[in-house]
Length: 294
Image 1 (cartoon, one colour):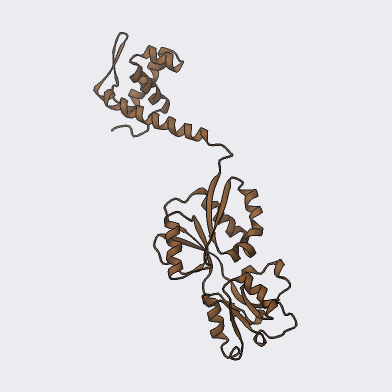
Image 2 (cartoon, rainbow, N blue to C red):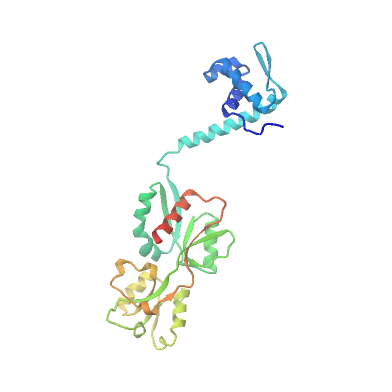
């Protein structure tokens, strides 16, 4: 029965040099060892492989047919190993990895931006770049997001939606609520003021449907930007609808109508390309997001 144990790497290296140099003496000079050390390594390799690799005739060492078959393959393996090691040596602690994050402007401003200093302190060599996207990935916007990730324009996207593309993987970050808020703190009911509604936001539409009776006589103002809605809440003395995860200390001046909150239809999620092995930078960023939310 043949020995299935892998042979010594050092013995293989000695064989590679001896096969290319044509003599054990020259191999010993190249390796900086004694000729007897070369001989012992070759003998060890032959014993491990249970084959004869060199014909020995006084000082002449010629390869056997098995040795001739093995030599170029071993040479190729060591060349590849040397290239790999050289690439590794060229890497340094200052090597920067780029990661492109697709995120809505409101989520970046109210939710992520203030937390980024913590990420950079933990992972100083991961450089983040940002691309603006929709907050909701539904129908066309879901297809556009999937295409951008598959074509590597984005590494990941953060938002709400139901993405069925088999090439896209998702991780739920948290479940949030849609909250009515107002800059008018003296008002006890959100239904006594105009409502600022984004007609393209499914959670806004769901709120309108849920409170259709209470809002029957309410003036509806269309606005598709969160920051504009917050500004108009004061200027128009109106109610804005905002995702609960976006409520920050900077918005402490708002009156929040918690009793009228409604669960968002989809959980806040991360979307990225499905692959057998994910890039280290992507994994690090996802784990960090999960950490700051938990």
